[in-house]
Image (tube, rainbow, N blue to C red):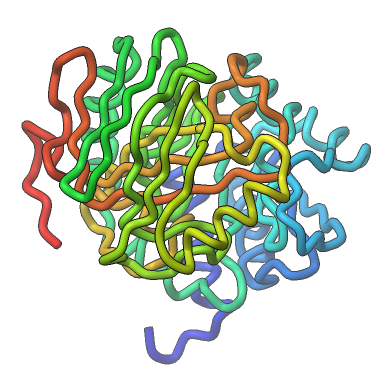
Length: 347
């Protein structure tokens, strides 16, 4: 928007988030956890918007990590602040551990004492992209898609993912529970981010069997192609990756698995539900949310399938499958990238 400073853009985005997506109420305690690399205009905008709505916008700045160490615990100060929060906004730019700390899972999932808005990706001057997502995405539509898919997944026992690229993966999802990230988090126990759009959960530990053809982006800059004509091929046995084949991306992935304990565990199988997103090669903050994609993840699962996950490691690596078919207990819910019974996918 011409004429608006980055601070003005951040203020517009922040007010929309607080008022519409989080339904902030007077007197609520909002905890914004950032680090020294987080976009400061966005931090100030969120705190100011919370205060304008009668809530308390509390900001806590922690040192940067520069290592995505999911097992690093939150500081005692951050934990004490977290216990008093109604709304938690983790936006650390240099690590994901502010989301994956088990105290976050306890308060958010088990005790349902708070709701979350995960916005770690919006830093480094990326507020304009956040504003465009708010302008162009109808999260009522995303919520409808999410709700329908999540119900089938929550009721399901077995998931089967295939693709023309070569995926043929089976896993149990019995009693795991799938969560909705659809843009709104108005009550305790709900979560959203920007852009939103995934039915997220994971397989029962060590039940995944088969082949995974990763033909999209891979997190941690392992694969930055929106569409990879030479997919990375993973072989999974008893829930662990036992073979990786492909080009340079495969070599990077092999090195990561070799250097991080339990990074070979299949930790997540989730479905993208946002029809307004187009692939751009950014796995975590864009492509895995695209309507009709599947993303699988390796490594840490203690948050994704809480309280059923036992894998605590410093890696949670998402990988995108572009046009999958997903069958749950014999019912096809996504066919070649098209969620059935819903709006047509357009690329």
